[in-house]
Image (cartoon, rainbow, N blue to C red; front, side, top):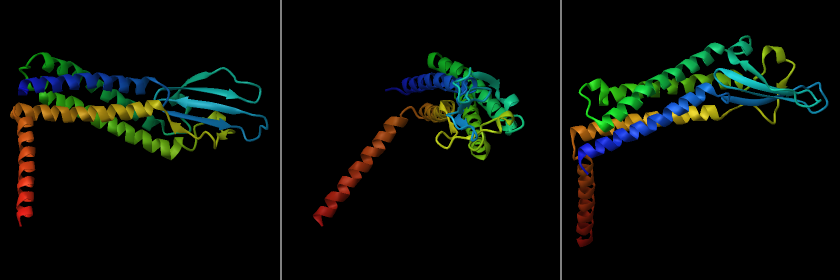
Length: 235
């Protein structure tokens, strides 16, 4: 397979993966499943609970005080937990996810451009794809680090707001990260793989026979190993 064809296939791979990555980042930013948990009232003898789940922007809660489930309530995370948690870190996490999503958009556009044509400007080519995907990878990694730190420092112990201090975390349903977090992790892994794909594209551009040469080296190593084995048998 010619070097140009391999480059086009790698660019196409970056394009498809970038679409998935953008979907992952938008899902994380717009859904309410970063944390899920249940709280109970220790002084109420009948079965009671409060199911709480929230994301980077909004969340929901539904309580049962022993007389049946009440209507589900929606709330803004920063207003609900301003007096309880470090909402600044949550806002920072949301901003980082937004930055990652923002830089994924040019990656989609320029990966498709490189698949169909040969750009004349370096920023539209391999160098640009390094910048877009690299920035998105770093931003999403920082988002994961920040949110993991606040989860283990605060959210894992308390998910109730300041108006619900009489409730406590249910030991049978302790706070845990939801699918929004795992989707963010998936997006980070995929956009990092894009950086690797762009690097391979550069290697193929510099040496069209890069993959062929790699295969020849492997064959040479196998040949040398067989020759050494033959010599050992003779002795």
